[in-house]
Length: 396
Image 1: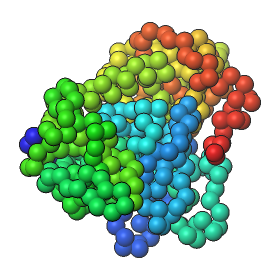
Image 2: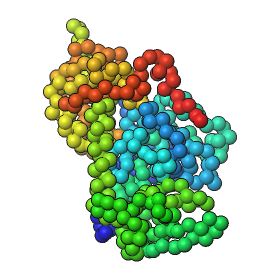
Image 3: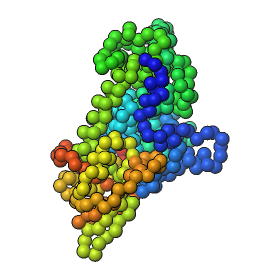
Image 4: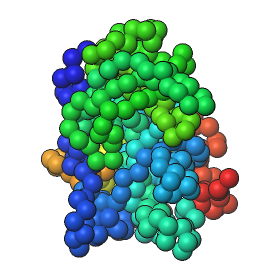
């Protein structure tokens, strides 16, 4: 496979490229301000805010979009890094939009983490003074971006040139795939030749099928997904040998994403509210980014969308579709180069009644022309007790 394919196969909008660059370590006031930016309800974080972190997914609370990563560098911070997705936080799998629930346990992930959203400081138990002294970034636990290796590297123009196989030594000898990076140096990435564990448990993709690892030949340009390996190594879970194989996996994930959002609706938050004297009113909403473009187009073509209130975890209250009021779409505006996390789409719609959650800075979800699906009851928030249980991550 020619490596220029991976330069062209950038899977996110240009705004993600803008935010993915880690602030340079010049110690400036601006760098510190970005690093320690506190997200605010109703406002998107600036480009480059927060810190980069990588590790293996070892715990998941899929309904509340939370989990934990085992630190990829246990020498500096042996703790798990627990995280909660920001309301506008995005997940990428195989280069396609995804949800936390789409991530297999053990997947090696790259995260951009910010300090907690204002009002959500206790969602993840705060680190102790001892932990902060050991790692000043331990309090960064709200993710604005979470992606697997193939998404992280391919969107930044990186692929791997195969050098060959090597038989590792030591107390637990393992076969290694020897590679070197092709493409630009990447903040938070591997920027030198590497050895990845590989065995018959590795899925090797060529075309639209699985092949034997012996199909990997020196000189090939490949993409990989990784997981934990013993003795501080990384092991391959997947190797893609050509464009067709990666595009096939990407499309499967895209279809999974479409199915999820069409039943749970597009998320965003309220920018402004205008109440009418006779009841109801108008809502101005900005839709979050990171969704497949088809979903936005489907919603745009809906004359009377439905809208329901949600929480910062994007969970809705019981029977959200039945109780979601519908109203005419009054305007639809698209802004080029929006802030990271924003779709750049701001819409205005009329509603016949105001729900309690229709307030500036609060999260909502909008239904397009999609068939109604009754969700499993454990995904909803049904009672105040449900909300209280969901308000904090319960550590194992």
